[in-house]
Image 1 (cartoon, rainbow, N blue to C red):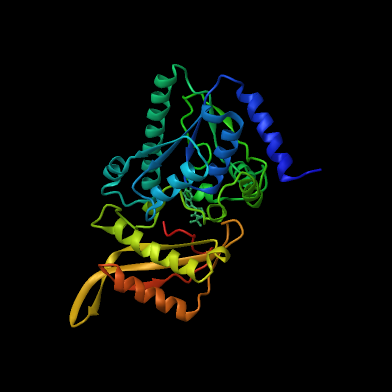
Image 2 (cartoon, rainbow, N blue to C red):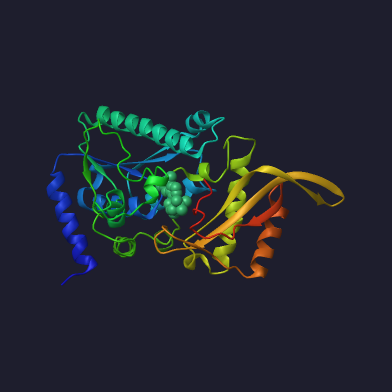
Length: 329
Ligand code: XMP
């Protein structure tokens, strides 16, 4: 019969026979569910002939690098090289305000780091890696190539997502996409069998360009990224503490490039404004803004203003998609 256990066994067989006993495989981990499950599966099939890279682009959430590396290494025993490329990304993003330009720069920097990783590996192994693992899901496949005449338009055409087909073509790597016939909930099931921690499998989606599309305008302005990380962490932690994380599709904070007047003690302040966004959705294509209890919002807002220096105003995004998108950029 059909079961996830069978899918797993079948995939492992296919990967083993595809890769053979000599070839090496590389994989870029994003910290998301899909690439993690895909890599764990391939690791189970070919062991340490899998070589993963995780890039800290300086646009990650609070303690994200530490948290995902702990899962990769301690829980999953994946062979991962962690590259801190914060300076490289942020210096390229300096002064850039156009969201699509930000995405292009981030995509390009990522490729250059990935290229260097592949070349270093080639030196070390004395042979080129031949395969690339990608966590492509079935909906990604359909979205990237909508059936002709279907009249479907997709977020890919609106924003340049780099999840699919965004890696260098001249590297001549053959693709391994072990999840390409699965839906998200099936990937989570598969992850559970592979002992990927439950909390990790339930993570909200996070965009490739990261906090760059959540700091409106120039991401390198002042301490915007740092402020955003602190606010986002308070918001997400409050959502988890209230037991709401799993009923929300995505929740995050946005840093607005404006200042507003406030008063703290008997001092006037002229500080930052942050927005909170939480939505429910089935697939990210449409979304509804999430109704929090007033008490919850009140607590979060106080907590943010009391503990994050430089923030004196918190606003809530009450638009659905459409007409808005989930992200602000
Ligand atoms: P939007 O903002 O288009 O987002 O309503 C729909 C879903 O896609 C995510 N998103 C991205 N993911 N690269 C990504 O990998 C991107 O450039 C990007 N832009 C949006 C967004 O977080 C939501 O889950």
